[in-house]
Image (cartoon, rainbow, N blue to C red; front, side, top):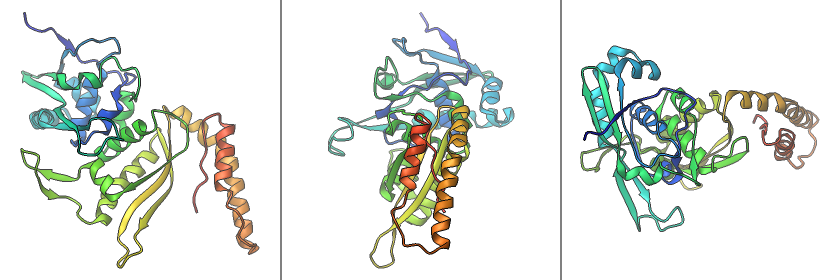
Length: 313
């Protein structure tokens, strides 16, 4: 008896619930491949015991992905061929395990079939433990949130940060990424069919940062789902002062309303901090303790978890 096919449901309020280990696994795909994967994962509900096979029409898919229908007809085979070949590499034993000591590699999608304007898709059984019956250590952003990003790097960064903080919304967090960690996160490589690197897109650290993390943070900060500030680039003290790492602070929000509330609530604290700082500079008073962190924490407490950062000048 053939497996029953289910229609893909396009609901932006669906959750894309994914285990943190899977999100943090080494992976790379195009924006369209990632969006198609998110749509498929969003069909999985908490009580599911197994994966289902899903079918959709190209016009429905194009509408939800907000792309031209004719373009999708043209590109769909390439998108699905690439997605079916994509793998994710997971460190077994968690982040504290010795890197490279034990790992697993598996595909995201087991099959994709096109027939007369209809696409049929099924997730790989290998990722069942990371999508089915999740109870802890997972992130579940809205499907609509993930579909709003216009670049793969921004999408990848948002997912990673959300998993890294344990999906805790509305709190200040600070990150520091070395350039090697950025390469591991974004995988800016061209590989052959066997996974061997044949070309590195950004061998210079300056270009790596310029074309990956910086535009990703700009897009993230301009969205309804994050506030980003205090971005800094850190260079070595050796000859040539090569770029080594970047750091930044960010707050992630579940929706636009919470970000708007946060921004409105914190403006008085930001204004007070900036006024005091400007006055000190104008009067050339001796430098005292910088109250930036203090004001951030005051705003954090006042917003009951909705902190307001102070704009860096």
